[in-house]
Image (cartoon, rainbow, N blue to C red; front, side, top):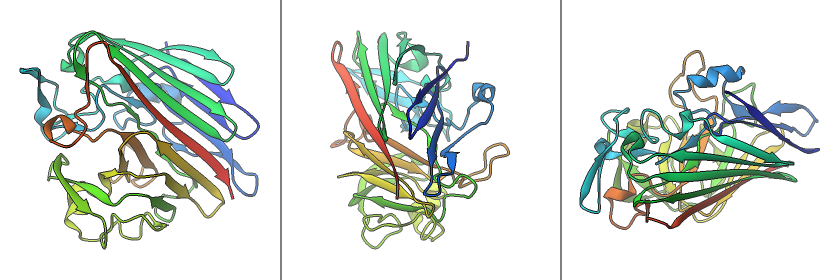
Length: 313
């Protein structure tokens, strides 16, 4: 049964669904006091039952793509369904984004739990996950936890599309990201394992610039992604701001952020209406030396924390 939960204070109002842990709305004022929802998604919550765009959802067991949907763990090969150019994507055909979580709310803290059985979407181990949303002052934090009874893969994130100016597209919003290196992708958007220095490329956001300034250049990596759809290695905060005074600062304990500039229309939704900001371990790390493999050992606890701070300038 589809349910929604509301976390609310004098500054922010956040609506979350038990389906996929989807963030349906984050309502905040601009500098003129206009309150709007800065999350792009569906207006009717029933529409999230068919959510191939992953609007607002928890992604798991693994965020991003897995090359050819296959990986070796402890000498055994595991296979997940391929949904994107022959690769596994965002946990498979029916990842966490399509699961109903059990919710428990106390004041402005919402705990969502889900049991993922052994073999679900080709992943080993009975896995129990908990995702905790906490609204405190001007910040929304998401804490992720997971424990499995067998070695498995776990690399979770949230796939919300942010737009601080909802009546416009994202191209003239400004972005700043403390990152020196991009993880290159191949023609099917699988990470190659090679790092690219962002200096003198469209991927350099160390100084604040608009999302659209370099988005349509002919850089080979932009052509491969159809725009921004890449992992950056991060050293500090990500800042997103709009001319209406709204600003969002995102911090995380994860080494990587994938940003997707919504490069293709979805149903009747035009492209570039939101920016997906997905803090996570390096995608497809199981196949690349030097990256986080995302292997969760039997009995160990996976943890992740990302904090979204909202500001009116």
